[in-house]
Image: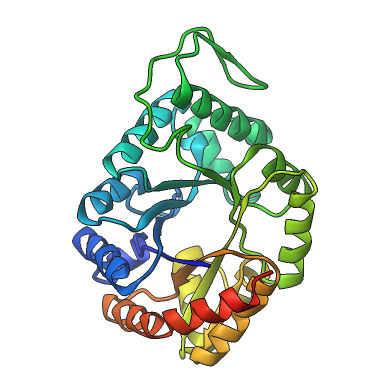
Length: 309
């Protein structure tokens, strides 16, 4: 069982007094406290420190912790240039990179795709083509690439990543189509469903494809703050109420035993790498929450390892 931490790199945290130096320091502390991974999110409409840039700084400040994107939206970057950037970051980190990817969210991402000139209707094919192109560039020097929507008659040479074959690529999403694609094309699965039963059934669908992937979970947590803390976080981050966000994403609050118990249900459903996002904005509260999570990290890991199938 692996436990990760999402770095607080959004505009809401920066506006509350955070800084890029603070974010890198949090990553260093997370490594020292025993977290297995640290992650950075991606968005155009919700301003944040660009994830691949941030993780480059984190890679130089840390030694062993895995680095991940949760999740990168490949459509926002040219596919060949992104392959070069990701390969370079994997080299800088010494092979510690995981690339979580997504295709945007209906009703929220259309204007972002319009901005970068990608047809939102083709977002899944664009994503799959991009990842396929990355893997070809990471393992060789293809002369051309012709997928469903991406077509290149000339491609640049990309330095080989530190990890043979390139960093593992995990897919976000829990729609039936996403589950089928995760099982066929990707190395891991990083969803955030509120209901552990949905997680279990989704993982079963993925495993029907016959490939061995890493089942992960993205969970938002706040120790001891109750729903008021989650409500404040949702409003600041999504400009939407907890009632709406909580129907889409797993949001957990309560004392240490309650948080462990709720995460245990996802471990029972099959999750093996749980990424925790702290639902806080103020740097002092983030520090307090991080210290609290560190105190329960060992019992949490023991409990989840015991419960995982």
